[in-house]
Length: 244
Image (tube, rainbow, N blue to C red; front, side, top):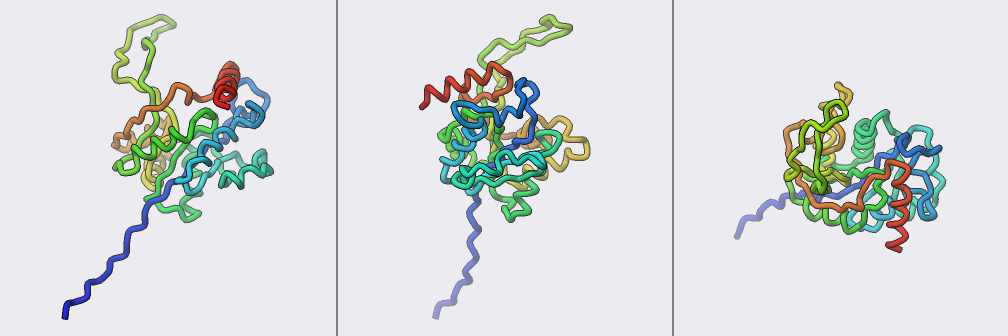
């Protein structure tokens, strides 16, 4: 009679979550209220961003990190339809907000082996197709990666307001978001720099680089820019109108 073989429990498949730091003041935008809440084509800018993620069915949950006491989005009934949760744990810097947001995810039972897509709330022109492309490229990657765009313009180095050199641009990329990493790995990478006030961390990929890893570059789009300056609002609105 053949011996019965023990059944080993299957390793649960990782899920993917979205995390949007949305606690900034947007001082460079020159607006009276934070730029993520400025109206754009009939609704607050951040809702355009969230709509792109809501259209990606593979995303298990979406979290928006807002400043403590910020209730701007809390009364918007559309968030429930988008599967959006608010995390009022924003910090004094983007890195702190992301770190606090990851703490919230882990406290809510998100597995450290799950993926997280960190995306700038002000990149309101991202598309669900771009999010899906990043997920496809990184799902089986040992590190993860980010959307980015090869630098199209001549790059100059400056000294005292004058050109000191023309820099080779052949291997230069403009980092975009989303950036996709394992929740636990990104949390550990940020925690390692927390005591130094996240020095050198300008995005999630840089935190992973500091920890010795090399994120994958996935080609993004020139339209996936971050609304930063006053003139960016008109351009973003024109693009949104052309899509609709």
